[in-house]
Structures are given as C-alpha cells and as structure tokens.
Image 1 (spheres, helix red, strand yellow):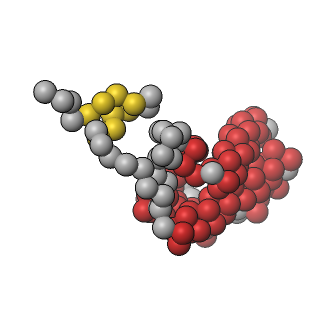
Image 2 (cartoon, rainbow, N blue to C red):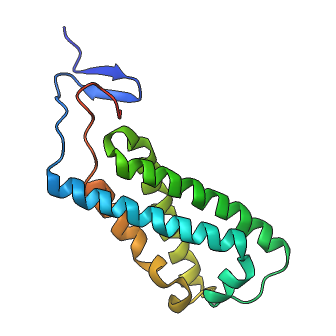
Length: 156
C-alpha cells in the first residue's frame, strides 16, 4: 500500500502534489505586503533602539522607568531581525516560507495582546493606532497569498 503522505524536511506533503507558483497578481500583493511589513518593523526597531523614550512618547505612552528602555532595546532587536527576514521573504517568498509563517504568528500574537490591553483599559485606541487592525490585515494577506513550494522542493 502506498502512503498518502510522505515525510518532507519540514512536515508532511501530500503524495503527488505538484508545486505551482501563485498567480502574478498574488505574488505582487505578497511582495508589496512583505516590503511594507519590513519597513514598519525597521522603523519601529530603529526608533525603539535609538530613542526609546521618545518613541514611547510618540505613541502617547506615559513615561516609563529607566529599565523599560532595556525591554524596548530588546524588542528593537527583534523588530530589526524580522525586518531583515521580511526583506528576504519579499525577494523570494517560496524560499522564505518559514519567515512568513513566523510573521503570521507574530502578527496574530500582536493583535491578541493589543486586544487584551485595549479591553483592560491599559491603552487607548489612539495609542495603539494601526496595531488595532494592521495585524489582522497582514495575517489575512500573508495566508491568502501564501507562496507555494518551489518545484525543486526548496521553500518547504
């Protein structure tokens, strides 16, 4: 009996399924979205790395104790790392599917955390600004435009 699934390097793949590139329109939407995410991550990363107190003030947050700048610096490093990853993904989405998947997870968590703190009254809609809706937009676009595996198996 032939197995329905075979084990691929990063998970099961249906036997006999051929990789198909997404349509040029979907690829363009994905590329623009990935570059947009990269830009946002880079701006936030640089702002919180170079001027954490000022970046927080721009968001309308009250002054935080000095140790908060340490957390902002660590957050900045992650933002810059994801900016890099989204740039790689924008150049070759099929080869960077794991970066895209990681960003889907990050955006989903971002949105859930934002909702939690909005509902608790810890932050206002004006303070969270685009974080109230952009993560949902990004998750939907990234999932709808998910890149297919390349015919040679790269991007699994």
